[in-house]
Image (tube, rainbow over all chains, first blue to last red; front, side):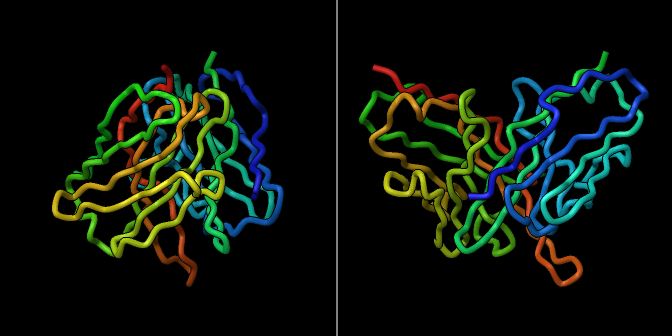
Length: 110
Length: 126
């Protein structure tokens, strides 16, 4: 099983700052199959980025993804109060079919 | 627009069977463009993929749950369902149904969960 480890566990930043969230895989992951999600309390996760760097429909360009192999990053520029949430990375691999999520990074906007 | 909605009992006794249904609107589950998944979230284990069903009826399951799990389509009702047998307290979680979209970019297939239901809290307790 591919394990995804996110860091930091919690990030506290001010509005207008830049957030950098990390996702490290226990073995190489295809960039095509790495996605990021945002989850607010009481809501399901919402897709932000797929294919490591493509923004999902309706996601503002403040959100960007990068990385390859075992190291991936979600960057949120110009933080806004509504960005306060938990962020998850997720990977898919075949042979055998497997989807795994990271443990999440909690982003707090001061 | 695309909407997914989970339904089923919110309380299941230990050793019994957990059954949930996901009703889909705005898109046909008979489309070959999507996979239909169940995902759960518990405080102890975070987000865990349970399994998916494809329009053809083919399935893939999380190996840790495979021996207790069945996911099926009800195409006439545009629904898909989850059955998890012999449940224990460890199966207590919020259960989500989700659509997996795929896209070809640079000759590679990219996939992600683009639509989710609101979630159904299921508690396993006597």
